[in-house]
Image (cartoon, rainbow, N blue to C red; front, side):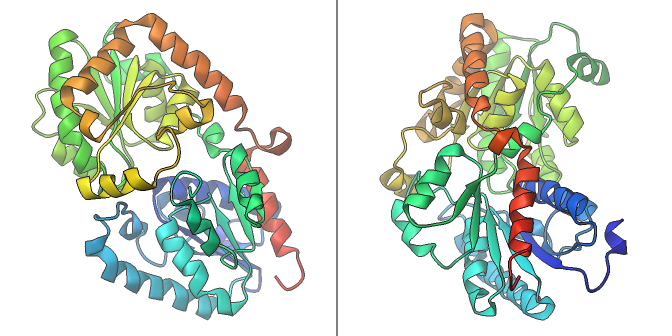
Length: 393
């Protein structure tokens, strides 16, 4: 049954994603749900991937893609209007279930606002309160009926606080990041077989890329003085492709900008090293076996506040899961062109360093499989359907 064939009286799931990674999760979840229940209907907010699955987004998803304690301030009024829009739509459509995906700043406010409607609610991707501001977990009871978590240690963490959390596995395992074709990438972009390829990942949000790209550009100039034939590749979501194109227009060496998922995975297969912002991108690169350094820079005030609140020893997800400094973390003051160039050069030229990272990646990825080895989207879909089957849903 195609999305447009769903019956008007079929169960409606209202689903929200606020950024590119959530859009991918939402699309996989919708596909897994429809495989099991072809009659399901969907409404809510999502990006191009979820729209391919039949969602008609209430408003453009990119309006929610903002982060940072300071960066969000100019957007408060418009975000508040969009929150009102979402609440009114849920009141009007009266779905059988509401699913919010990540984006806690917006999603948790929405879940709280719709609590009086007595509609079952699930939140997919746990707020990372185990990393910072752990006291916020006291605000969560009553926000959802079920929490779907991606990391194995999160289930026990939230259950200690009396919250029903279910580990469903990490969706990076479904990303296909390890299925790329290096030769195809080099042929497609007319690259020699021995040119070192460096992946640069400045982030999927409009607020991230402009902050990191100038530093990446200066880093690249230094790196090419040492390795003249290095080729920069920037995989980005379509949401920020124009931003990246404009920001790199004056770089001495024009990067290859890829927006297609298959092209990105081919680039991973061909890459010698990567420089990436912290986040899920580190797990994608780990799955593809790309040695990496992690960097990030935010507004100094945001950084000062975060330093006082963070309670974990690492920022990079691969380091948290490995429980050691498997990859370099070059943050804030260390997010400098010379420091970054040194780190990337070492990854390209020091085989022992690169291989040590790859061995560590294989170990940590084993712990990210869903219960019983299930595909993460399938495990998440089963949890959602079990909620639909409960009396009153």
